[in-house]
Amino acid sequence: MFRCDPNPTLATPIRHLARERGFVEIDLEPSGLFVLTCNARFNGTATKILVDTGASATILDQLFSDRLRLPRTEKRERAVRGVGRIGASWIYSTEIDALEIGGATDSVALTNLTIGVADLSRWGIAEGPKRASDIQGVLGIDLLSSNNAVIEYPARKLWLKRP
Image (cartoon, rainbow, N blue to C red):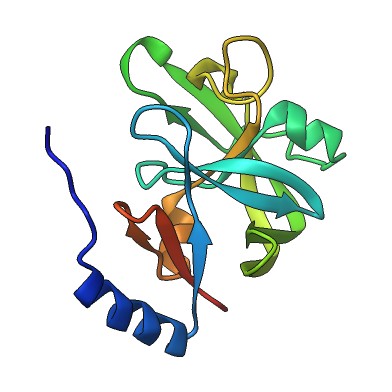
C-alpha cells in the first residue's frame, strides 16, 4: 500500500513560514474515500463543506440556502456537471454576508460574497438518507485560489491566506 507521510523535518519550518506570511491552518476531516471536508459558517450558521479543487465554484445546497432564507437569482446562471451518470444541475446565485472557514481555534472570514446555489443531492451531498447529510456545500477553486489555498493532504490541513 502506498503511504505518503509528511516529512516532519521539512513540515515544521514550512508551517512556521506560512503562519508568518498570514496563512491560517484549517483542519480537514475525511468523509469517505478521497473526500475531505472542513467546518464553515455561512452567515453564522455552522455546517461542513466539501473541499473540492475540481469544482469551479463554491456552492451551497439549495435546501440549506432556503433554511438560511437566502434570496437567489430567478435566472439560472449556468450548469454544473458531475462525473459519470450524474449529469448536469443548474446553478443559481446568492449573496452572503459572511463565510467563515475553519474551526473554533482559527479561521478565515470572507465577507460580501456571491456564491452558487444548487441541488447537491444528485452528488450524494446534503439532505436525505444515504447522503453526506452533514455536508451542506462545496468549497470550490474560486475561493480556494483567491485565498491562495495550499492543501497539505497527508497532514489533512488546508492553509488559506487571510484577506
